Image (cartoon, rainbow, N blue to C red; front, top):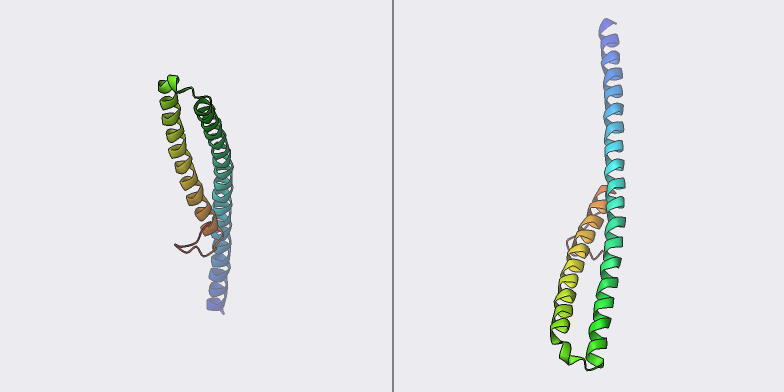
Amino acid sequence: MWEEIQLSGCYFIFTIVQGILMTVWFWMTASRYAQLLKEAEMLKSKIEKTKQIIRTMRGQLELNISNMDLIDVPRNMELCDELQNASVHLQTLLTRFRTMEKDVLKLADYPVEKNDKI
């Protein structure tokens, strides 16, 4: 009789500890998921701004070329350099965004293959 009471008490304590651990795990996962979503929104904003900068610089360069403003070669070269730097920055942001998307999918227990295109 006493052993049965001890076993049921141990089971009760085990159940409480398990519930606490599952709750902590849930809140940690939800917190990380929310953080990743916030970072993803920030990255999307940066990507859009960088795309707009690239469009503006490309437009300025095309305008200079179409107006045969080849006399301003240093400015055209500067625009080309800025355009290339912005393109590299955009590629970096896109890579970070894709990595973040994979992290979000892993948190959601979605199987991510190496060849998956997100």
